Image (cartoon, rainbow, N blue to C red; front, side):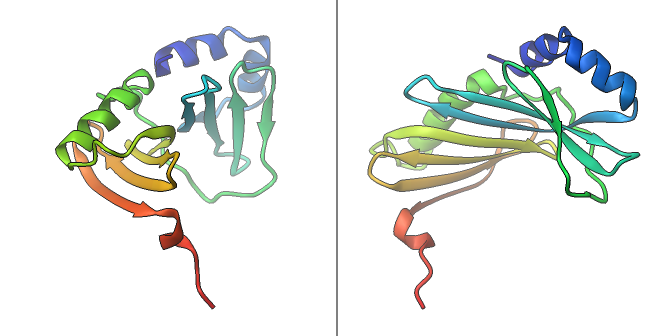
Length: 156
């Protein structure tokens, strides 16, 4: 699934039409995805409602749009003209793994957040390895870092 397909499906929903009538200043601010080898992918579109300073979340298959209770001062408008789309993330991760000599890490889940025109990807493996990747709007690697799960455990 790609981003434009998700947006098209959401716009076709009656709930979205009602949401936009009630919140005409709402705009797309972020995309959250979980790509899982089991095929249980999650797609979420986040909208910023400027007049209420709140985030509204629509999760595929877009049965409802939930406005979060927390106030957010501001959140930038997302440019959906991105080079690496949702359906290309797995291939892009494989390409980066090859460039970084990380071919042995078998990624089973990709958690991705597209915000401020940057993809932040956290790739998890079955052996508890983690690869963190940041991609700019053009698909160029900003950062790639490999760590083990235990690297994130805080010792007291």
